[in-house]
Image 1 (cartoon, rainbow, N blue to C red):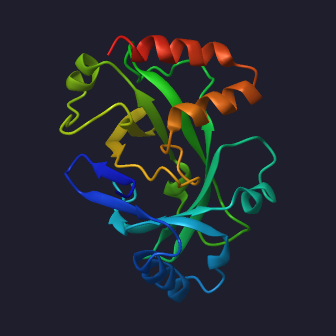
Image 2: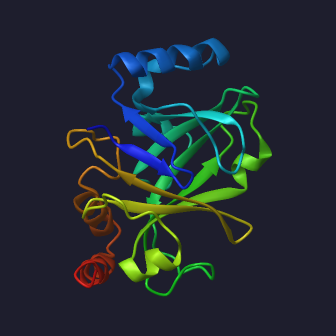
Length: 218
Protein backbone atom coordinates (compact mmCIF):
# COMPACT_ATOMS: atom_id res chain seq x y z
CA UNK A 1 0.00 0.00 0.00
CA UNK A 2 0.93 3.64 -0.39
CA UNK A 3 2.46 5.75 2.36
CA UNK A 4 -0.47 7.34 4.21
CA UNK A 5 -0.69 10.37 6.48
CA UNK A 6 -3.51 10.10 9.02
CA UNK A 7 -4.76 13.33 10.58
CA UNK A 8 -6.29 13.31 14.04
CA UNK A 9 -9.75 13.94 12.57
CA UNK A 10 -9.54 10.65 10.66
CA UNK A 11 -8.62 12.12 7.28
CA UNK A 12 -6.34 9.84 5.26
CA UNK A 13 -3.86 11.52 2.94
CA UNK A 14 -2.21 9.05 0.58
CA UNK A 15 1.14 9.46 -1.06
CA UNK A 16 1.78 8.44 -4.68
CA UNK A 17 4.88 7.89 -6.78
CA UNK A 18 5.30 10.57 -9.40
CA UNK A 19 4.42 8.38 -12.40
CA UNK A 20 1.06 7.13 -11.08
CA UNK A 21 -2.23 8.36 -12.53
CA UNK A 22 -3.15 9.98 -9.21
CA UNK A 23 0.15 11.84 -9.06
CA UNK A 24 -0.10 13.06 -12.64
CA UNK A 25 -3.52 14.61 -11.95
CA UNK A 26 -2.26 16.32 -8.80
CA UNK A 27 0.85 17.63 -10.55
CA UNK A 28 -1.32 19.08 -13.30
CA UNK A 29 -3.44 20.87 -10.69
CA UNK A 30 -0.30 22.42 -9.18
CA UNK A 31 0.98 23.48 -12.61
CA UNK A 32 -2.34 25.20 -13.36
CA UNK A 33 -1.94 27.37 -10.24
CA UNK A 34 1.86 27.76 -10.20
CA UNK A 35 3.18 28.22 -13.73
CA UNK A 36 6.79 28.19 -12.47
CA UNK A 37 6.43 24.67 -11.01
CA UNK A 38 8.85 22.12 -12.51
CA UNK A 39 7.18 18.72 -12.34
CA UNK A 40 10.46 17.04 -13.37
CA UNK A 41 11.86 17.49 -9.85
CA UNK A 42 8.92 15.65 -8.25
CA UNK A 43 9.56 12.15 -6.88
CA UNK A 44 6.33 11.75 -4.93
CA UNK A 45 3.15 13.62 -4.05
CA UNK A 46 0.41 13.56 -1.40
CA UNK A 47 -3.33 13.93 -1.86
CA UNK A 48 -4.79 17.39 -1.45
CA UNK A 49 -6.00 18.00 2.11
CA UNK A 50 -6.87 20.81 4.51
CA UNK A 51 -3.76 21.73 6.46
CA UNK A 52 -4.34 21.75 10.22
CA UNK A 53 -2.42 24.98 10.94
CA UNK A 54 -2.88 26.90 7.70
CA UNK A 55 -6.55 25.88 7.37
CA UNK A 56 -6.10 25.85 3.59
CA UNK A 57 -6.16 23.21 0.87
CA UNK A 58 -2.58 22.11 0.27
CA UNK A 59 -0.66 19.63 -1.86
CA UNK A 60 2.78 18.44 -0.76
CA UNK A 61 5.38 17.36 -3.33
CA UNK A 62 8.52 15.39 -2.50
CA UNK A 63 11.33 16.89 -4.58
CA UNK A 64 14.82 15.85 -5.57
CA UNK A 65 17.47 16.67 -2.98
CA UNK A 66 19.73 18.29 -5.58
CA UNK A 67 17.03 20.86 -6.30
CA UNK A 68 16.84 21.94 -2.67
CA UNK A 69 20.62 21.89 -2.31
CA UNK A 70 20.88 24.76 -4.78
CA UNK A 71 19.22 26.92 -2.07
CA UNK A 72 20.05 25.21 1.24
CA UNK A 73 23.64 24.41 2.16
CA UNK A 74 23.22 22.52 5.43
CA UNK A 75 22.75 18.73 5.38
CA UNK A 76 19.20 17.39 5.25
CA UNK A 77 17.45 14.09 4.60
CA UNK A 78 14.37 15.07 2.58
CA UNK A 79 12.99 18.06 0.68
CA UNK A 80 9.40 19.05 -0.09
CA UNK A 81 7.41 21.85 -1.62
CA UNK A 82 4.08 22.68 0.03
CA UNK A 83 1.52 24.38 -2.24
CA UNK A 84 -1.48 26.25 -0.86
CA UNK A 85 -3.87 26.00 -3.81
CA UNK A 86 -6.42 28.32 -2.18
CA UNK A 87 -4.10 31.34 -2.07
CA UNK A 88 -1.45 30.34 -4.65
CA UNK A 89 1.34 30.51 -2.10
CA UNK A 90 4.06 27.95 -1.43
CA UNK A 91 7.16 27.13 0.55
CA UNK A 92 10.13 24.79 0.48
CA UNK A 93 10.85 22.70 3.56
CA UNK A 94 13.47 20.12 4.46
CA UNK A 95 13.57 17.35 7.05
CA UNK A 96 16.63 16.78 9.22
CA UNK A 97 17.45 14.26 11.97
CA UNK A 98 16.73 15.90 15.32
CA UNK A 99 19.86 16.39 17.44
CA UNK A 100 18.86 19.36 19.61
CA UNK A 101 17.79 19.29 23.25
CA UNK A 102 14.27 18.01 23.79
CA UNK A 103 11.80 20.93 23.60
CA UNK A 104 9.61 21.83 26.56
CA UNK A 105 6.38 20.65 24.89
CA UNK A 106 7.71 17.09 24.43
CA UNK A 107 6.71 14.21 26.69
CA UNK A 108 9.55 12.67 28.70
CA UNK A 109 9.39 9.28 26.93
CA UNK A 110 9.06 10.78 23.44
CA UNK A 111 12.04 10.13 21.13
CA UNK A 112 12.15 12.78 18.41
CA UNK A 113 13.56 11.39 15.17
CA UNK A 114 13.47 14.40 12.87
CA UNK A 115 11.95 17.82 12.33
CA UNK A 116 11.28 20.17 9.45
CA UNK A 117 12.74 23.58 8.64
CA UNK A 118 10.76 25.93 6.38
CA UNK A 119 11.91 28.49 3.80
CA UNK A 120 10.51 31.02 1.41
CA UNK A 121 11.49 29.78 -2.04
CA UNK A 122 13.24 32.16 -4.45
CA UNK A 123 11.13 35.18 -3.44
CA UNK A 124 7.95 33.43 -4.58
CA UNK A 125 4.64 34.33 -2.87
CA UNK A 126 4.22 32.59 0.48
CA UNK A 127 1.98 32.75 3.51
CA UNK A 128 3.97 33.94 6.58
CA UNK A 129 2.16 31.30 8.64
CA UNK A 130 4.07 28.66 6.65
CA UNK A 131 7.23 29.68 8.50
CA UNK A 132 5.59 29.71 11.94
CA UNK A 133 5.35 25.96 12.52
CA UNK A 134 7.47 22.82 12.31
CA UNK A 135 6.64 19.14 12.12
CA UNK A 136 8.39 16.81 14.56
CA UNK A 137 8.48 13.05 13.87
CA UNK A 138 8.79 10.74 16.86
CA UNK A 139 8.25 7.35 18.46
CA UNK A 140 7.07 6.79 22.02
CA UNK A 141 5.81 4.05 24.36
CA UNK A 142 2.14 3.16 24.08
CA UNK A 143 1.32 4.73 27.45
CA UNK A 144 2.68 8.07 26.24
CA UNK A 145 0.75 7.86 22.98
CA UNK A 146 -2.43 7.11 24.92
CA UNK A 147 -1.80 10.12 27.12
CA UNK A 148 -1.47 12.23 23.97
CA UNK A 149 -4.79 10.75 22.75
CA UNK A 150 -3.43 9.17 19.57
CA UNK A 151 -5.53 6.67 17.64
CA UNK A 152 -3.47 3.47 17.85
CA UNK A 153 -5.66 1.41 15.52
CA UNK A 154 -3.63 -0.81 13.15
CA UNK A 155 -0.24 0.58 14.18
CA UNK A 156 2.90 -1.52 13.71
CA UNK A 157 6.67 -1.22 14.11
CA UNK A 158 6.85 1.02 11.05
CA UNK A 159 4.30 3.53 12.32
CA UNK A 160 5.76 6.96 13.01
CA UNK A 161 3.94 9.75 14.84
CA UNK A 162 4.30 13.48 14.44
CA UNK A 163 3.12 16.80 15.81
CA UNK A 164 2.87 20.24 14.28
CA UNK A 165 4.28 22.82 16.68
CA UNK A 166 3.82 26.59 16.57
CA UNK A 167 4.83 29.06 19.26
CA UNK A 168 6.15 26.12 21.30
CA UNK A 169 2.69 24.52 21.44
CA UNK A 170 1.36 21.39 19.75
CA UNK A 171 -1.29 22.49 17.24
CA UNK A 172 -1.93 19.17 15.45
CA UNK A 173 -1.17 15.46 15.75
CA UNK A 174 -0.50 13.02 12.91
CA UNK A 175 0.66 9.49 12.26
CA UNK A 176 2.12 7.85 9.18
CA UNK A 177 1.71 4.25 8.05
CA UNK A 178 1.40 1.95 4.99
CA UNK A 179 4.83 2.68 3.58
CA UNK A 180 6.15 2.18 0.06
CA UNK A 181 9.32 0.04 0.46
CA UNK A 182 10.85 1.20 -2.83
CA UNK A 183 10.02 4.87 -2.27
CA UNK A 184 13.32 6.66 -1.65
CA UNK A 185 11.50 9.96 -1.13
CA UNK A 186 10.00 8.87 2.18
CA UNK A 187 11.71 9.18 5.55
CA UNK A 188 9.22 6.53 6.61
CA UNK A 189 10.23 3.87 4.10
CA UNK A 190 12.58 1.73 6.19
CA UNK A 191 12.90 4.80 8.39
CA UNK A 192 15.12 3.14 10.96
CA UNK A 193 17.83 2.48 8.36
CA UNK A 194 17.54 6.01 6.96
CA UNK A 195 17.77 7.46 10.44
CA UNK A 196 20.92 5.51 11.30
CA UNK A 197 22.51 6.46 7.96
CA UNK A 198 22.16 10.18 8.64
CA UNK A 199 23.26 9.86 12.26
CA UNK A 200 26.41 8.13 11.03
CA UNK A 201 27.11 11.01 8.65
CA UNK A 202 26.59 13.42 11.54
CA UNK A 203 28.75 11.31 13.90
CA UNK A 204 25.85 10.93 16.35
CA UNK A 205 25.32 7.15 16.46
CA UNK A 206 24.77 7.52 20.20
CA UNK A 207 21.27 8.70 19.33
CA UNK A 208 20.60 5.50 17.39
CA UNK A 209 21.51 3.43 20.46
CA UNK A 210 19.06 5.47 22.53
CA UNK A 211 16.35 5.00 19.91
CA UNK A 212 16.64 1.23 19.68
CA UNK A 213 16.73 0.93 23.46
CA UNK A 214 13.46 2.85 23.61
CA UNK A 215 11.88 0.80 20.82
CA UNK A 216 12.57 -2.38 22.78
CA UNK A 217 10.63 -0.94 25.72
CA UNK A 218 7.41 -0.43 23.75
